Length: 140
Image (cartoon, rainbow, N blue to C red; front, side, top):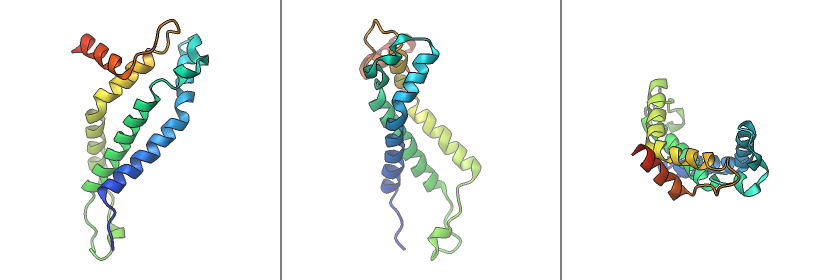
């Protein structure tokens, strides 16, 4: 029996997540802009603003989550049957999820700042670097 590499798990989980985020991103952004009552909801370039970084965030989150959850799973009771490997415990999966959220929190903050910057149609939205610098200046 050949075991699937953790790198394959990482790329597969990340790729599926990033592609699905890319498919729904403009709709999510439009709903956010409509909810705050902004006219920028009709600007196509603003609907896609931040999509690249959000896809990277989703890729990393789900890829890392899958790899770490797979790495904490106990070995199978019978080594000749690796498909019978038990799942991770709830506590283990919860701890891994919290760890990955904390690990990617700085990236998530940049994404949030970029999305927040699109609500004003009179200003250019923040780039990734501008959002990161703004966060560092405001919160250190």
